[in-house]
Length: 78
Image (cartoon, rainbow, N blue to C red; front, side, top):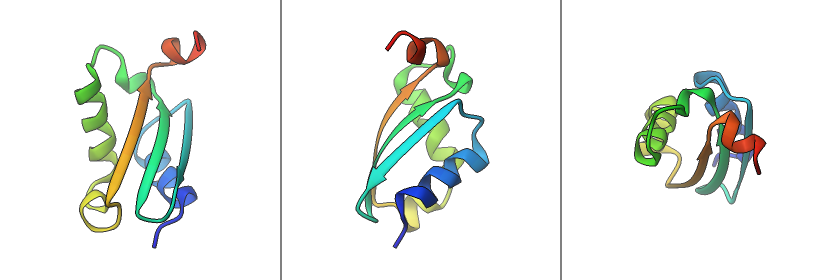
Protein backbone atom coordinates (compact mmCIF):
# COMPACT_ATOMS: atom_id res chain seq x y z
CA UNK A 1 0.00 0.00 0.00
CA UNK A 2 1.28 3.46 -0.91
CA UNK A 3 1.67 6.33 1.49
CA UNK A 4 0.73 9.92 0.64
CA UNK A 5 4.45 10.78 0.85
CA UNK A 6 5.25 8.16 -1.80
CA UNK A 7 2.59 9.52 -4.16
CA UNK A 8 3.91 13.04 -3.56
CA UNK A 9 7.43 11.90 -4.41
CA UNK A 10 6.28 10.11 -7.59
CA UNK A 11 4.68 13.36 -8.75
CA UNK A 12 7.78 15.41 -7.87
CA UNK A 13 10.07 12.91 -9.62
CA UNK A 14 8.19 13.21 -12.91
CA UNK A 15 6.68 16.69 -13.00
CA UNK A 16 8.33 20.02 -12.18
CA UNK A 17 6.20 21.43 -9.36
CA UNK A 18 6.23 24.51 -7.16
CA UNK A 19 4.08 22.84 -4.51
CA UNK A 20 2.55 19.38 -3.91
CA UNK A 21 0.36 18.26 -1.02
CA UNK A 22 -1.02 14.72 -0.89
CA UNK A 23 -3.27 13.08 1.67
CA UNK A 24 -5.00 9.72 1.60
CA UNK A 25 -5.55 6.27 3.01
CA UNK A 26 -3.25 4.14 0.86
CA UNK A 27 -5.63 3.58 -2.05
CA UNK A 28 -7.58 6.83 -2.37
CA UNK A 29 -5.69 10.10 -2.45
CA UNK A 30 -6.32 13.83 -2.65
CA UNK A 31 -3.69 16.19 -4.03
CA UNK A 32 -3.05 19.89 -4.53
CA UNK A 33 -0.48 20.31 -7.29
CA UNK A 34 1.03 23.60 -8.44
CA UNK A 35 3.07 23.51 -11.66
CA UNK A 36 4.02 25.82 -14.50
CA UNK A 37 3.35 22.80 -16.76
CA UNK A 38 -0.36 23.55 -16.31
CA UNK A 39 -0.20 26.96 -18.00
CA UNK A 40 -2.40 27.18 -21.08
CA UNK A 41 -4.13 23.86 -20.37
CA UNK A 42 -7.69 23.25 -19.26
CA UNK A 43 -8.41 21.19 -16.12
CA UNK A 44 -8.78 17.91 -18.00
CA UNK A 45 -5.44 18.44 -19.74
CA UNK A 46 -3.82 19.39 -16.42
CA UNK A 47 -5.06 16.15 -14.85
CA UNK A 48 -3.76 14.20 -17.84
CA UNK A 49 -0.31 15.71 -17.23
CA UNK A 50 -0.42 14.37 -13.66
CA UNK A 51 -1.69 10.95 -14.80
CA UNK A 52 1.21 10.73 -17.27
CA UNK A 53 3.65 11.65 -14.49
CA UNK A 54 2.28 8.81 -12.36
CA UNK A 55 2.25 6.36 -15.28
CA UNK A 56 1.38 2.75 -14.51
CA UNK A 57 0.96 3.54 -10.83
CA UNK A 58 -2.48 4.95 -11.70
CA UNK A 59 -3.55 1.52 -12.92
CA UNK A 60 -1.75 -0.69 -10.46
CA UNK A 61 -1.28 1.09 -7.12
CA UNK A 62 -3.43 4.21 -6.98
CA UNK A 63 -7.13 3.42 -7.12
CA UNK A 64 -8.41 7.00 -6.95
CA UNK A 65 -6.79 10.42 -7.09
CA UNK A 66 -8.77 13.59 -6.59
CA UNK A 67 -6.75 16.61 -7.72
CA UNK A 68 -6.77 20.34 -7.50
CA UNK A 69 -4.33 21.56 -10.15
CA UNK A 70 -3.13 25.15 -10.22
CA UNK A 71 -0.61 27.28 -12.07
CA UNK A 72 1.84 29.24 -9.92
CA UNK A 73 -0.17 32.38 -10.68
CA UNK A 74 -3.42 30.80 -9.50
CA UNK A 75 -1.67 29.53 -6.36
CA UNK A 76 -0.30 33.01 -5.60
CA UNK A 77 -3.79 34.52 -5.62
CA UNK A 78 -5.21 32.01 -3.12
